[in-house]
Length: 439
Ligand SMILES: NC(=O)c1ccc[n+]([C@@H]2O[C@H](COP(=O)([O-])OP(=O)(O)OC[C@H]3O[C@@H](n4cnc5c(N)ncnc54)[C@H](O)[C@@H]3O)[C@@H](O)[C@H]2O)c1
Image 1 (cartoon, helix red, strand yellow):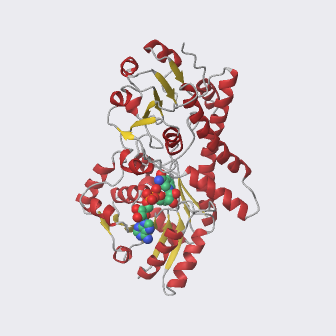
Image 2: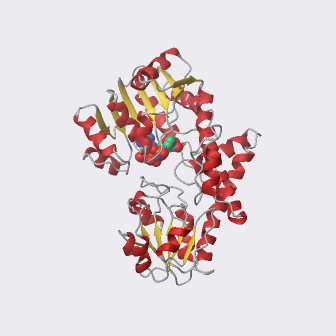
Image 3: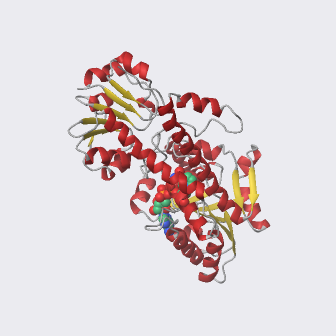
């Protein structure tokens, strides 16, 4: 099967590489010359564990290539995937469909024979029909069907998620398109991963509903965590206790500094706008968005309290700034709210993050980047653990205490405990939703 993948970001690149690993012939297209240069030199422009090896293997096998020439990639392809960005539109919170629609126009001009145009980008309900209208308007001769195939991979575990999905959702309207989609995913189908075929609108809605639900679950436990702090309950115990209920499930119940990333913030915002447009306000989602902002603000207060009410003149070591571990993605990371608040209030901030520098350097002005945690801790008045990279899970707390000017820790991922901190000599320790007495 010949496939063109338009957009080689976190989703397009992983999908293109994995489809080529299924045995398909894939051309990944991007507009960004810097990205293409790297890809054609065998380098992966993003950090995603395992992607470099899989990419190299499939390039070597002659099944995978990269190009800036959309028309050449589309010619002869049986399926053309749109995997371009759908960021929040400036000003109104809607999904910005500029990239999707301009890709649709370019594809329309390039279509020479029948192809399924598959939208993998996360798009509001009704977008696939707009894509179809656009293609028909630009090229009245075009022979095509559209399909909606939302993606559920998680950055940091993207290959495994793509290769072993909980489900594949395919929205189609014709048997011909359904057969092509089935053939594309045949290797997964043969291994009994469920493929759910549905209509276009339901497929589009499934993606937004899934992300809004997960954002709600995270926000729920973050709110419970705040109440735990006031009542003496331990949110880790509460998460465990409710997560063991099969109806609830243990995932996405870890209290933290608020959700961020390339999907939840923009997708909850888009869903809220879709609801408003249809006069069906998404009240739960709107509240989740609001509470999540409060959660981030609460984190800032925690650090201030830990530092005796003010961070002015304090040296603070921040551990982790990407929105989660195992990615270099900084989009809407809680660190982008928390770190500037520290810098803006007079703290001198040193940041250590295994992959955050490339994106983070421009996004976090006024901080100093260091490579080593203990180096970051030297002379520090407080450590703020923001992203739970494996590198930060087994720190030598005693050594940190020795390095620091005043040993205080805000553990915003609940990796350690007050007992551990106390035993290692920390004079102050704060975490989320737990009793934090140290003295
Ligand atoms: N990142 C995730 O974890 C994730 C997970 C599931 C779904 N999604 C969705 O997938 C979509 C893509 O997300 P992403 O994170 O991969 O985006 P991204 O910003 O990392 O990548 C988009 C790429 O598309 C390219 N592009 C834009 N217009 C183009 C055009 N006309 N022709 C060729 N290339 C073009 C850009 O240069 C960029 O490289 C979004 O709708 C997102 O919501 C993302």
